[in-house]
Amino acid sequence: MSDTKSYIKNKEKWAFSIGALGQGMIYAMMSSYISDYYLNVLQLAPMFVLLLMLLARVWDAINDPLMGVIVDRRTTKRGKMKPYIIYASIPIGVLTVLMYLSPNLSKTNLMIYSAIVYVMWGMIYTMADVPFWSLPNVMTPNAEERGGIISFGRTLNGVGSAVPEVLFLVIGLVLPRILGASDGLEYNKTKYLIMAIFTVAIGLLLYARSYFHVKERVVIPDVKPVKGEPSRLSRIFKCKPLMLVILMGVLSSGRYMVQAAAVHVARYAFYIGKPLEGMSDAQRVAAIEASVSTVKTIFQVCAIVGMFGAMLFMPLLMKKFDYKKIVIVTCISGFVASIFTTLIGWFTMNLYICIPFILISCIPLGVLNVISYAMIGDCLDYMELTTGFRDNALGSACQGFVNKLGNALATSGIVVMYMFIGLEPDKMLSSNVIMAATDLAMNQRFAMFSLVSIVPGVSLLLCAVPMFFYKISGKEKQRIEEQLAQQREKRGIEIGK
Image (tube, rainbow, N blue to C red; front, side, top):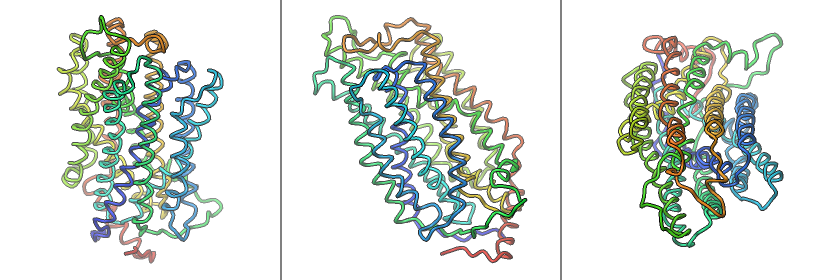
């Protein structure tokens, strides 16, 4: 029989999920805004930003499996996963603030500074991210309970990612009027620094708190490598179901555009507000920044309703339907919605008419954010059953690899679009001028809009393809769970209370 006993109490479930909320705040502060900050605020060379984002994030993605190997090798008195939460918290906080500090340096030195901080942030974040999202695999052996805590944790993680969005809106509407800002560039530097400090102060407190209230129960004894046996990485690569989940994640990289590119679309595709003619410099800054904040918020509300709404229903859907069917149906629906969004944008460039379709296209984002982690847990069950080994951290690191590679590709795509349409941030935003989206040619505006319309849609369609070959579902999944429980009993592996 598979393990159906309940191990996790509500207090522990909330502790893990609130920690995920704090982590979501910090990650969103980087992933959703750093490209805008580098391109439009620090105004670093687009080619430099492209290379930094692509190479550093790809290297960071490679670090995830390496971190997984390190974590899986040793169990300490405080646990296998938990100690890293404490070790990495303060360095992540310091580096996040340094990332948005805007030091007064020459362009060359500023690029060096930005590159060092950005790469260090990625490496330290990996040190915390891989063990944290491996925790559900060691908190309970019950696959359904594990799926539930992952779903709830990812939902609150998504809620946390919305906090910087709220700050972006409030600061964008209020700060220019408080400061009487006529210098859009300095205003944006101040705005991002305030956002970073607030996010770090709250987010890290919530994240680090999980260390004290989460318990590791599924403790698979450390086994010393035996000469000639397959390595950890080899076992991962030979696990076909896991490779299909990873391929699904890589092909869905375009979905990150909805959040990463939204601020760029807000700057360069739409202007919502009073006519700018006749306004003073301070009024112009306030009006344009209010428009950027409003448009960005519209996309964020669509994401909240679509993505987070889907995540709230995921526990129920995951109980009633196979994971693969959920992925296929929602991703194809998201693709269809993106076609309507693109057509409306092409003919009207009316953001309000696009809203229902943007909302629908955000639903698969929530589904994939939850279900990919649950599917990896099932793949680790399959690997343990067939090999006798369970590489929890390394398996979860594969999802970290997918997330970071996806963000790298999405952010790089944004920079490539800047270069492709000839967009020059220093002519749009400087100490002397701030221009609205309506000052751009219509083809430039639509090109930026495509980053959040057809690009994510095509990506969603592609990511559904590997699921047609994924076999851990239905009766096969039940068989794996039952045989794994029997195997653990024979091996004398006890599950903690």
